Image 1: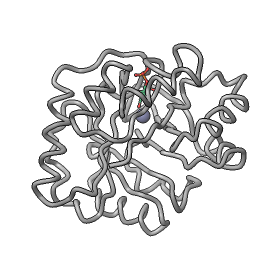
Image 2 (image 1 turned 180 degrees about the vertical axis):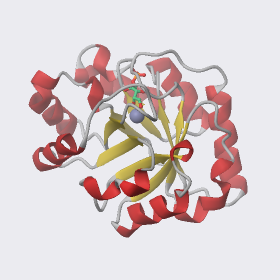
Image 3 (image 1 turned 135 degrees about the vertical axis):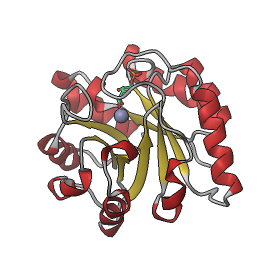
Length: 219
Ligand code: DX5
Ligand code: ZN
């Protein structure tokens, strides 16, 4: 499966945002990861609806919206997304998973189910026909700069095997949290193909150099 990079915009230098987005376009970055937190599902607030609108207006790269909010199915209409974008909703955040996923797909976007480190990888087995990908959190959602949760690489491996055995080879695996250059290589070997790049990789030095090193690691 094609390997893709999705830089986490919460790690951007907001006062250099324009330059950083241009650098991502120049480097042919596949997605822009946007973390949305509501202070309830996770103990933090981050980016929101107006931010996404601005990004979509000023940059041609598809967005990869990671909703860490309660009952996302009631709030999807607030967000600007469409064809080619990814929207991830958390398994743990709703009792109406299938309704939320259908709403995303009806707007032409790719629907992903995100799971926290404590959540079993097989929970999405009932919605395999509705999803384009799974987002395996490899740190607890809420903050950048954390350490990889133990067992994460094995979880990615098990998830890939589970999907392949059920004949869903086309379902993508995105990984989010402490995707350092070294961890990215292990995650890639374990079967992940979309890599959220934060403070552990592209935002820890020169952007273009970081992207090149990460591309090499996930080859
Ligand atoms: C949370 C975020 C973070 C973060 C990733 O959903 O997506 O995981 O920005 O970057 P790191 O973990 O490298 O700081
Ligand atoms: Zn995220």
